[in-house]
Image (tube, rainbow, N blue to C red; front, side):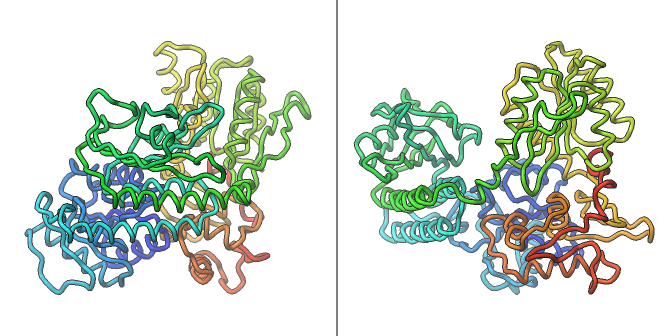
Length: 591
């Protein structure tokens, strides 16, 4: 049985691909929506074949997956995309490309051809419609942009990318999504490894990196340049004119966050609502690349679309979805009995519950405020192990993670962590300590903690570590939710009915819908919210698609699908029956 990896940000398409492949004897080892997700799955499962969408979530490109898996064992790669010419004209590593939309039979035949190419180096007809075998790496016929035909091809490609970006920007309700797509589109249109966007800050008189493609992701919001002529970006901002630097001196390294020294760059301004530009959009390469006027025109077109989007967001104010995501119920710190755990922050709708066990009240408040600002978290705090025990015994609440101090007034956090593990609690636990010796770190990890953070620490470090552990846990086989008569294991995409001794296999999309409904809690999830959150911000999910998935889930889960008792339709949306979840759901994190 051949093992297949799917990299696809549209989970409806991924779900259909998985179902078709499973029915025809393939083993789907996982679905990744980003480059990082797909690469991690590939190294874990060592697939034989990979189906890679070219455009992925967060502005990622599927071609990057192939590059990062170059050291993996021989891997058959099939690209699926609406823009086949972009793959054909690039240096993408892979075997073949299939254009969207396609039929399931075309996908199966394309995989057979890729497997044949891997085994024999040749492919036998018949070939599916809009299917292309990619030339071997290094033998690709890339048009010479110095000749007229090559320039026309490049111009048409850039126009296609610009049109796609314009369509994308019109559908978005958050500015960060538009900014991320802008830099990704800029890199794609110019065939350059790096693209970045700098926003002008008048108070600091600098240019802050607000979005970037090709650099480390953590520099966004951190790196800044002087708003003067010392850098090409600053020069474009000051002169209000495009700036091309095709041969930067080796002594000039104006971006210390770049992967390598920048050699060639092109920058244009992003117009603002008043006389001051919003900022600068630029692309660069760590190898020689001759940017020319067509490139300036393309990048300026992307910048103009950006300017219109930014002006639209400024007229509307914060989008409702963003405002709702950041809404926080009033802080209940210091209210109620002093010997009970306190609820510091809650977020509407879907929410992860975190227990912070820390006797420093000031640190408690700071962490609670940060979690509230992030959105999507409910935080409970306890100052002692006794309060933590009281919280853990509450049958009406489960915990998705625990942040646990080592030194507490009534005991040692490491010993408490070990006791939680002995009692069967499997949620991520991150230890906090003021001690710096390696012995303390080893002791904390040996007690069963997932990670260890030394005081003083940066909030961004703690939050990143917690996020990483939550992702690992929720994708692991340890995560178990009780829903009605079933134990739901999202990592395995499995429902277990122990009473009837049966196991029900779910598709990735069915598991994602069920997990989201559980995470939302007892309230009703509106259809458009469920479609947007599960299928992704850039999907066009019709109402019947969602209803089809709910129909299939009911056929699998309900005793009588015509009179559902678990998956309830209510007030324009769906909800899980609260009488069949709740107290037993301690299995999701507490056990």
